[in-house]
Image (cartoon, rainbow, N blue to C red; front, side, top):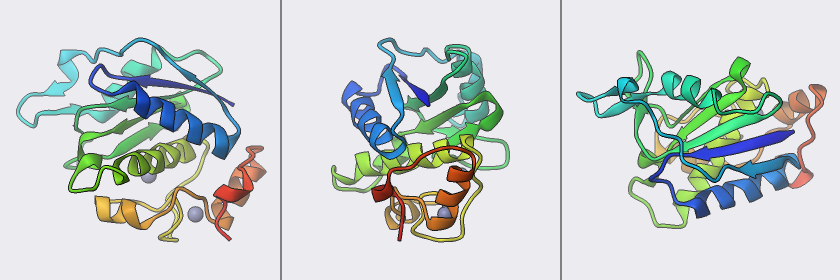
Amino acid sequence: MLIQLFRTRNVDERILEDVALSLHSIFMAEVEIQNYYIELPDNIFDSERMQYLADAVIYHVYKYKSLAAVAIVLVGFDAYIKGLNFVFGLAIPHLKTAAVFLPRLAAVTQAALFPERIRKEVVHELGHILGLKHCSRINCVMSFSNSVTDIDRKTVKFCHKCGKILESKGYRISREFLLL
Ligand SMILES: [Zn+2]
Ligand SMILES: [Zn+2]
């Protein structure tokens, strides 16, 4: 699997390096950090809500993706989708593209938790791209998070059931990222 990591201009490159290392060790994936910024178009920003429309962000980033790759963009702005006040992340599996929105992940925390939350959300969205649905096991990375408390409660690992589904689709997950 080839994963391309993108960012908007207000995201520090070290965050991408950290995510790249995790994705490499979890999925044994080849990870490419793109060395340019993605500029998001003004017409997908809602200036009353001060948020981007998350699905439109993904459609925009999709245009930069190589055909065979999976794309993940880290966005330094808040975002929403129709019917939800905000999203931490969103994946559109048939586009093999996902976005993780960072501002809310930085909320009320010690500095160390911020990168950990980003890793969990990136792995979660990638799980959706690879065909996983939400999982009812609260420590599984595929459990749904409605708050940073939920994110902090889960791990960056897949439960046995989610791990099996990935395996059946031909993806290999390194053992230390499978919950016992
Ligand atoms: Zn989800
Ligand atoms: Zn699970």
